[in-house]
Image (cartoon, rainbow, N blue to C red; front, side, top):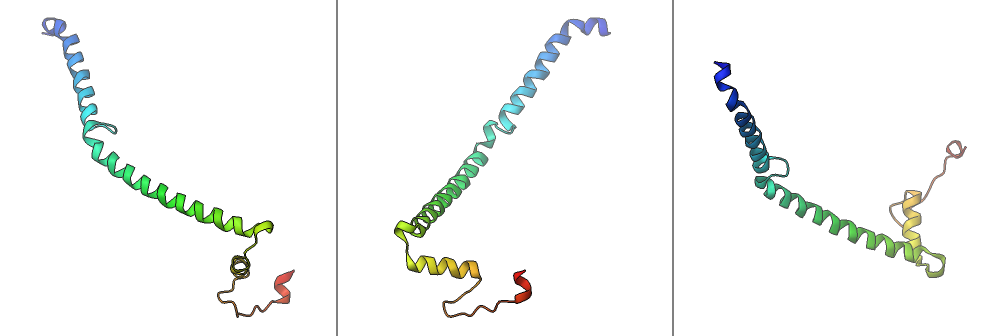
Length: 101
């Protein structure tokens, strides 16, 4: 029985490999039907990039105003309040002598 099917074995293997390749082309990670998923991911990544670019521009502007040649008093006060843990300009800082050492 196996002897009679022997001429068809290469054709069967080629058909199996071809079927596998076609299925992967259609449904694989980068397949034909996953285009919508890639488009959605691309839109999300573009929104993140836009947000990060805006944040970078804001940080560059803040850094520009903190340089000694172009010092902004309001920005310096705001940054000092953040570093000291103050929430308002008229807040008081109580220092603990034990925490200093």
